[in-house]
Image (cartoon, rainbow, N blue to C red; front, side, top):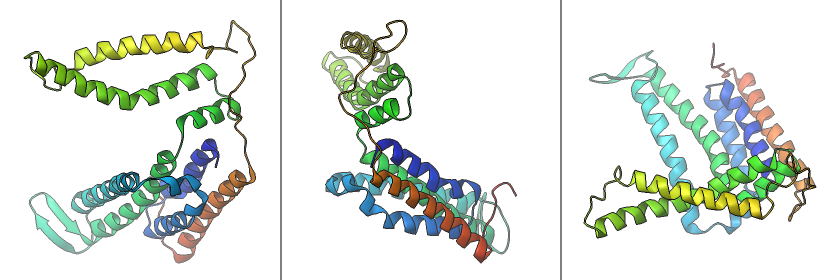
Length: 249
């Protein structure tokens, strides 16, 4: 699927979850999201380690949100547990269950999409299909590419300080890391400008070409239709069962 369509997919399936706190719409959305796994062809190429990271991220987000809601959620109904400032009631337990499903349904497609997405392909779709400014898009892509490199530089700066007999604490390494990051940003900016990444921007008015062509295929159209069906089914089932609970009510 086209990277831009993947982002649209996540936004569409998240709409019912942003306006309701009931467990029915969240549960239906989560179940239907698992059924869409065949659409993500890149997911089959993920290694076991990458899948472990995705599962751990999803589990941590779901468990943390559910636990916080259970312990400090809205009180109501019979009291199930009391321990200091913690009051677990039937209302907080039901809210914790609904919140757990809701967060899982929100995080699962987002983590899956961005774990299988190529940043360069996303930049191509943003510039060619969404018509966003190329300078902004490619600058953001370069910044995302350097996130992993920055973490490596952080470790190397700390090791270098320790080798010189200096304190290698995280705070003391921030200033050298900032200087190193600024120098690298300047070098990358000059290199991108020399390679014509600002072509097509004023005042050059040069026609910009693309190495790859980003297109929307029938598979992308199917993905948008599936996303609309998931959102519609989740809302309809929740309304029919009488579980729809608008967040502002």
